[in-house]
Length: 102
Image (tube, rainbow, N blue to C red; front, side, top):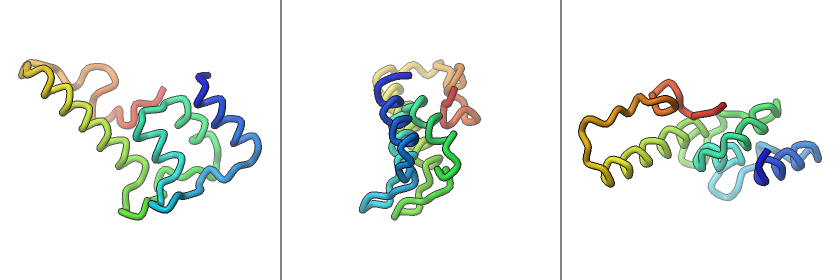
């Protein structure tokens, strides 16, 4: 478990509110998915009160955020390498893999 996931696990063990929202309605799950923090997301998903369907103030769920973050990463990769033969369906990058959790 990496440092961030260990901190999240410690907070979960301390019964912290894993569905708490900041002023933008963003939850820890939104942050974990947006930053592709797989281990943190796994810890949060294991906690029954964390909800992947909990929208932020703009109506985006953590799954929306994960998808948007992945598309942005693909666009950046495409801009850096204008190789039209690149396969975006490589392991972990297909539409069914969002968010790419272990």
